[in-house]
Image (cartoon, rainbow, N blue to C red):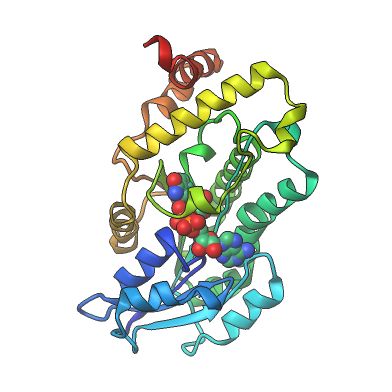
Length: 289
Ligand code: NAD
């Protein structure tokens, strides 16, 4: 029997690539429910599957911030079970903390944190009853170490780590495996979709010059990181596949293959000062190098 997979956030990026890859499995090992908040954006996914895989792919509307929408999507799963749940939907928020509105901060937490938890909640009782299941979550190195000008995004991704790790301990007793796929920069629409304060925006007028100078450096750093070392969604999909295929998947997968050196620094130097000075140097002293 094909494994039933439900993925959130499939209109672009990692979710889209994963849906396409699993739905095109030559052995038809998966029935994929690719969900997205806005069905008007399904063309890209449809184009990527080129009309093929009608029997292995279904597209459903699902907004992870709406419990009703999650339950409606769940109700449309013909097989009446989900074997593999992929919580992937997420958004970014970038800029000096003092310009972020309560509303935009709430939105990030609602999608990234509560959206993920709420999705898991909806499928968990059935998985427990089935006595097996997989929950995969798109994590971020921003959930493992802090990044300046990404405070609220990192807070949401750190929170996901706590929620998933806590859940994994319990679900160990239910034959349900939770895995975080920890991504560094990936070439997707993420940087387009994120809410970002642009230099010159009126909201930045109130911000002190020192912060603005550092923000400018950060944006340049970020641009060059994405240009030079971002992974493609295909690389990320391979890691998801490893986790899915493993009979006993790990809790954490690093898409680069190894724990990033900066994350390691947090463990080897637990007082945090090494991390802070190293990260600060990497981001803010580019010109001096
Ligand atoms: P993306 O912007 O292409 O994809 C994110 C998807 O989530 C979009 O399709 C968007 O429509 C969807 N989404 C947003 N709000 C939603 C909601 N309320 N309900 C349902 N779907 C919603 O970017 P991506 O890089 O593919 O992002 C996927 C995941 O990867 C995110 O959780 C992101 O935080 C994480 N991530 C991305 C990067 C990166 O550099 N691209 C790095 C680390 C982690």
